[in-house]
Amino acid sequence: SAYSVGLAIPFLIAALGVGWVTTILRKYGKVMHYAEIAMGVLLIVIGILLFLGVYEQLASLPVWIDFGI
Image (tube, rainbow, N blue to C red; front, side):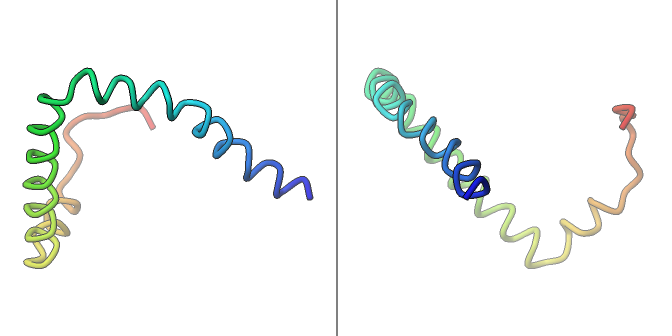
């Protein structure tokens, strides 16, 4: 039962924030239209990269930035 409660907590917090997010999305409606288009294009490009195998080649490149992880 503790697992179920722990799983439910993030969903309950998200449900409490829905009204706030809806208000912000209405306020920036015009900008969100362009953001949706940009995210759609990005999703298509990533899909093409995955299909062609380019994404795996990019992932195998050495990391130039050391994040200290």
